[in-house]
Length: 159
Image (cartoon, rainbow, N blue to C red; front, top):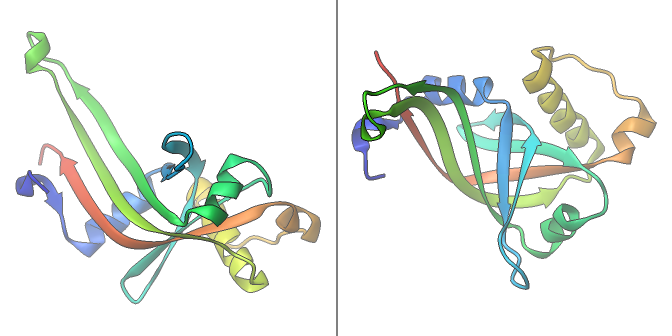
């Protein structure tokens, strides 16, 4: 990271950012066309210091097919964006927190982990952790997991 003064390394601050963000952007590699970037609702789980990011989608389409064909993905999420006005265009700035990273994407087939992933997504969206899922609903969607390999966390905040 070029701006080490803006790097976030504290695990509590990283967790705070992951909890505040609402949209995960996933970048897929498509060797035939061009990169494919898609915004998704997400949830996350941290196990022994390693993060897994979950999202769901249709069991068909470009995202689904690329998840099977090319499991290496990039991702980005951000929160707390606020524009800082300046007297001229070059004096404008912004406050923000962001995470950029890479990971390995997989389809979640295990029933227990599917519920874990869907629960994490719902917790992120609603703040509520305890959910019951109807079989028809939870089985109608694909559940995806990104096992984070690398991530860089950055903030430009007034303290």
